[in-house]
Each structure stands twice: as structure tokens, then as C-alpha cells.
Length: 317
Image (cartoon, rainbow, N blue to C red; front, top):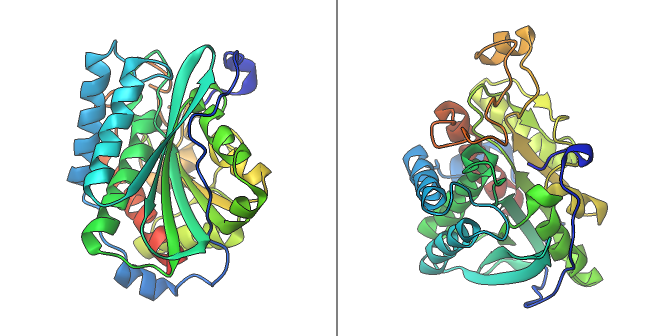
């Protein structure tokens, strides 16, 4: 998740197109009933998600300790994700741009089939800050979205709507990659995207359970999932407008997502509801060198990863 404007580095440089990705979309039919989605959506194995995080940690360790925009660790991260998706039968495309004098990349993966006029899209930013490996921010979202995509392949899922997944570059510089993607969609292709789901920091070590309140249908889908677990949620406010859903929302595309907290402090009421430590940040390693593979709460990561699959199955059927 990027820093607020007052704390982030100003952007320098221009955006240049190497490959213009087409859009597609999801609006349309009502989501499946909660019971149907619960029955259909697969369990996302926590061990698999954590294996992806271990790979991202190894990549960061081998590349100066980070996976930041324009650095070798970012490109290696993208290559890792792309190889998994290519092997699973996705159609992948890499979109290139320039920001702050460095080359950045988005990765977009389409699952064959489904109504191309009604696209359900899930995404996360793959870059870290330069200070550390970015395993919670945002390896957690990236790994959960990747494993959900792989679950689609394993299930041989044939949704009514078209499924698209994305991993964004340069989010930490101000949602550069996702903004570039949205800005380069034609009006028709923007209209085809009926919903974009964003996952940025979903394994915070002192977690909360926050749901975006932007689109009522998407919000209800996530709330229904957590209600089924007996887990209370709150509306997400800390990261509002500070992650990759913002460019989609600004373009009039319905958005939603999940968040487990960054540097805001957990209250006593929240600790009573969710456990953890009151008076401590949700993620004390936010944007720091200690955001490593040790900086993950397995329960939060597991619940949120399953919620990714639940929502995609419910909204694409």
C-alpha cells in the first residue's frame, strides 16, 4: 500500500506503452446465492500461499533485500508469477511503463472462457518499497490472488463471466501501474469490467478484518463470507484511495476488496473482537525492513485467501 501523498515520493518520468492490454468486464447477472458460493468455492491451501511468499522472500534476499519498482527483485517476482500462470493455462500479457526514470511492469492473466462482455477482475500490487521485502505489503495479496488463480485452473472452473487477474507495478509510487492500465483501456473495455477486487495487505501480524464499502454487492459478498465464519468486520478506512482500486473507482468501475491493517493502531474494542494486541499497529513493520516472511499472521492470511476465492466464485457464476 502506498504512502499518503504527503509522505510518498513525487513521481518523475513519463509513461510509455510497450503492450496495450485490452479490457473486458463483469457487470451483469446477480451473484450466486451465498450457499451456492460456499459450496462451489475451493479452500485455498494456506501452505501454497505461504510457499509463494517464501519464493518472494527469496527473490528479495537475492536482489538487494527488496522487490521495488525498477529493481531486479520486482522483475524476478513478476517472472515467478507469470511462469506459474503460464503453466496453469492462463493467457498472460506484460504491460510496460516508465516511472521515475525506471521501467515498470504490470502482469495481466486471463482465464479462457466466460462472457468477455462481463469481466470479474481481481488484482494486487506486486512491488515492495525499497526498504524491505514487502511480504505483507503486498506479497500477501499477490500470493493469495496467484493461488486463487491456480485454484481456478485446478478446478477446471467454467464461470459464466470472464475472469481476469492482475499484478500491478509501482503501486508504492502512487498506483502508477494500475492507473496506466485503466487509462489505456478504451471506453468499451472499461464498461466490460463489472467489478474489480483489490487485495493489499491481507496477512498483517496484528490483524483486523476490514472490507471496502465502495460497491454494495461486492461489499455484501465479502461480509457474507466472514459472517459464515463468525468473524465481525469493519469498513476499511485507513487505505481508502491509497491502493490500486482507486484508478478503477475513478473510472466508474465497481470496486471492493479486503485489508488487514497497516500503521493505524488497534483499539481495545478491536482487540476484544479480533484478538491481538491493543495499542499496537496492525503491522508494525509497514514499509520497513522487517516486513519479511516472519511478518505474517497465518489465520488472517488463510481467512482472507479463502475470501478471495469465495468472492470470485460468487461474482463470476
